[in-house]
Length: 491
Picture (cartoon, rainbow, N blue to C red):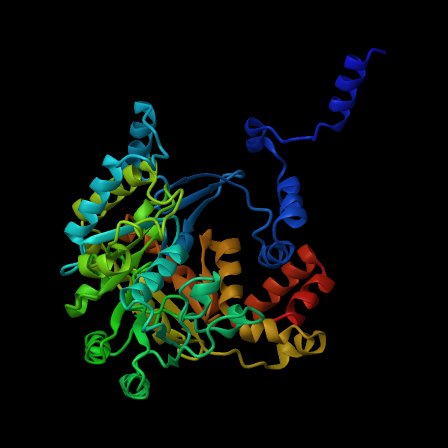
């Protein structure tokens, strides 16, 4: 054997067994699940198996619906945690991406001014509240938050470097954003800024007290979600946002609003802060800005704040992003924004949201011992369930230690039953597992959503005991009792 032949044979022997792109649609679901377990997030796959999600193969998506390999049509109430206000594969948004690709233009363009990025920035400033007129583009919500914190600190030249945030908030999971995220589960074992003050959401007296105690004037900004999404779809008292803005500004700090879940119409106004005629100093968005097709986020502020932070020629590259504001994403976001405005997403959310909330309130009235409250506004809704009280049927759960999962994650059980029996996808919010998220696409109609209150009512009428029995039995059958108890023990 020649040396060339030996080298070729050796190289062929070492070549990895790659999955080809065109073979992915035909991969067996068992192989997909196995790859997730081996290479991605094994614990998440265990959770999916418990709920019966692991063997569902999604092959197509359109509007508010997902379509499975075995012919089911699933109504999506999760909408990628609110990122799919336009629904799946909105025709205009998808067409915008194809239009851009067909032109053969450069996508990553950093050495020259981009017409698409400039146009998107212009359009965002045209619809943004008040005098917000300066934009930084990035790839995600957590990056937009990081950008907001950095702009605020640099605006004050580092003399103010602390932030006030609220309990039960969720602003991201990177190191900086964890410092203003109000759930210890995500902050545990991660070093962060321990001295940044946290206050109860909606509590003006607590907010006043924190700023009054800031005698050294180190607080740079107050960071708020106008509605706490992952905290349980919590709407603050009327007037809170405007009053909180006044508190911050009287003490010389900036108001920073997280509109990642609320922007582009979901709550009945294009931006939630408009409901109280509040203009923040910094506002950041992501999720629906990409129309469900592009990954893009934006931090929007005033020109004077941007100038203080990065206005000098030797500081204009202090905060940048290689992929932030790439041309393809900007083009798609332009169309997504146009759809939200032209198709009146805020009006749709108000009209359909008011109707859906009324239907869910009727379900709550029929099951007041199970549903505590219907939360939210527009099509950013949540169902809060009472903690489950165990009766005779639950004795086996106590003995096996599974009572904790039933009591602590009951909306997850309701979601599993909605998927199995009614072809509806629903889940609990991240910070409050007693609340089920209801975030349908803003393109959904009353006819699409009419099944939701009927399905929930049917499950609750059937009885909590039967629902829990079916779900737990299915989880044991799919994942095994050992896996189930291991997961419960980790909560």
